Image 1 (cartoon, rainbow, N blue to C red):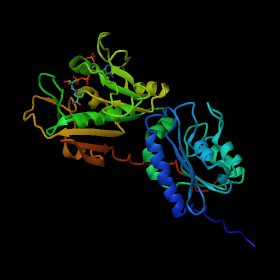
Image 2 (image 1 turned 90 degrees about the vertical axis):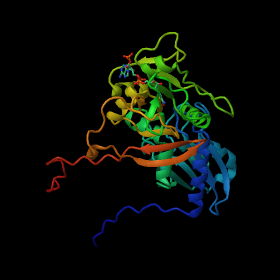
Image 3 (image 1 turned 45 degrees about the horizontal axis):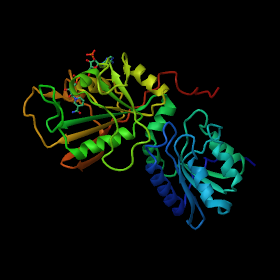
Image 4 (image 1 turned 180 degrees about the horizontal axis):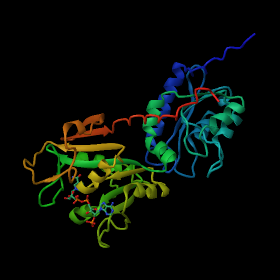
Length: 362
Ligand SMILES: NC(=O)c1ccc[n+]([C@@H]2O[C@H](COP(=O)([O-])OP(=O)(O)OC[C@H]3O[C@@H](n4cnc5c(N)ncnc54)[C@H](OP(=O)(O)O)[C@@H]3O)[C@@H](O)[C@H]2O)c1
């Protein structure tokens, strides 16, 4: 008798598991600004009927991981239950013991994972360790939402570079400062409070030396309400900042932007917020290094061509070369508009002749 090979079975999920992943995503969102350079992960332990037995989210570095927190809450009830977690459980000893050991020791029957962890120390080893211990493992539940939520972490661990968010505040006619260099303030207090949230979610905030000279910004996180941030982002200036500038102490970097990003990645920067000015914005944009554009538009017009544009220097020369992104989010913030845009998906690189699999199968 010949055996016919079958394609691997696509994972399936129950409604209860889908809901539990929603809860895990919510919990992870709540700790977004508190875990870096570790990932912000959420977890729920559920009974087969969907009853939540325990839930948890990553604690600040050195603290408990989401899985361990959820298992502790569930206690003995975790035996035979399902653990739903946004990111693959770790299988290595870091500052805390491997989560996979805790999952197996708790007697969990099934683990449902949103996405795999590209960290070279995990990278499939977490799910493999669970499967080897006899746990039923399924990967990919609500993966798109999980990968959007963890995008800075996933990029850092797979490329060594931070996720780059470019923020600019502009008039409706696309100008970020007046001809005399003044830019405070084009947008209102609500938009500025929103920028502080962006800063709080970033490990570094970067501006050009021109902006330091023009605006003397502090670049600190100053929340409009709520608790003080656990830490301030690293402040980075491209070029040299005056020792007396308010941005000090700041890290001064220069040279090629890919090298700048590599350096920030080495410093465990998962997300860098680029806050201008026009010269720096154009450099990042032209080099295709921006992962997310967050643009605030005030219902205001400079009404001429002498104010500072969003991007200094020449841009697309013809409509065919227009850069077109994908709208991620548009909302009103106070009296202003907040527009979030992602770059277009990169076209797959065509395989060169001879790159494909050997037709002889040798
Ligand atoms: N509305 C907003 O959102 C917003 C935000 C920020 C700034 N702004 C406005 O933008 C204006 C400033 O823009 P800008 O274009 O003049 O200045 P900029 O983009 O802030 O800084 C450009 C300067 O940064 C340094 N630099 C840039 N890339 C570098 C690299 N790879 N290596 C080393 N040094 C590098 C150079 O400094 P050196 O010249 O010292 O060599 C360069 O001249 C101001 O009017 C400010 O108010 C508006």
